[in-house]
Picture 1 (cartoon, rainbow, N blue to C red):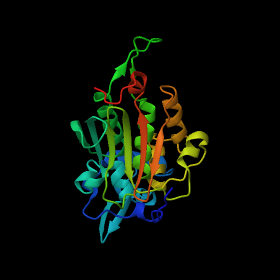
Picture 2 (cartoon, helix red, strand yellow):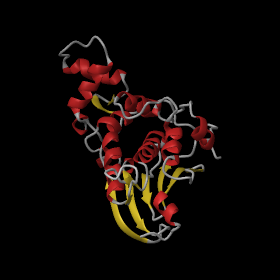
Picture 3 (tube, rainbow, N blue to C red):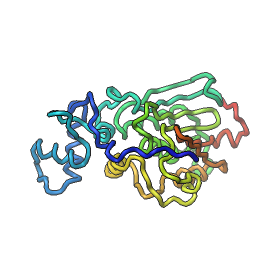
Picture 4 (cartoon, rainbow, N blue to C red):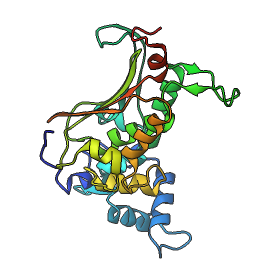
Length: 267
């Protein structure tokens, strides 16, 4: 297991150069601020909302201009990738078992955090197979448990190193699905051990993770990796795999359809 230096604590609150308030979904931002900060009143004025957003680390200033921070843009930006294109998700369906094989479909997913997750999941739904469900014929089983894919995506987006230029990637092969995120582990944790026991939450980006928790995207109680393992275990006996280095974390989910068919080449 390789470690990298943790992200500086102030980075998430850093103003994003080249951005402005017009890059934000202001109604959603203001609703979030009112929900998070008691005492603003039923109809706070714009100045009070901006001060509240600053306290929450969502807005900062460059000179005399109020601008989104890293977390503010990622959570509430209308199109964060116009300013930071590397903050999107590269989704690809490869017809084979290697990246050099034919690309059958791809989508460069853009938008704020919640949209990145939902659009990436839609790509998975559209580019994977289903199998008959003998117990519940009206509910065919997906090739990859959506709960496992969702947790892997959220882990990649919340724990990636936003200082690096790589994009989170979701890669669907004939025999597996991979979620790759830039930046190695910042703490001496064993992902395999967390997958079995859980109970620890050490986010690389604590402010982004806390914002995602308040938005209802994550729980932040150390259940993410065990949930991936549990959801996959209910579909196949093949285990989830974790690969880490100084530059990446990669989560690999095996296709239970291919495993049951004994077929790696796939369709």
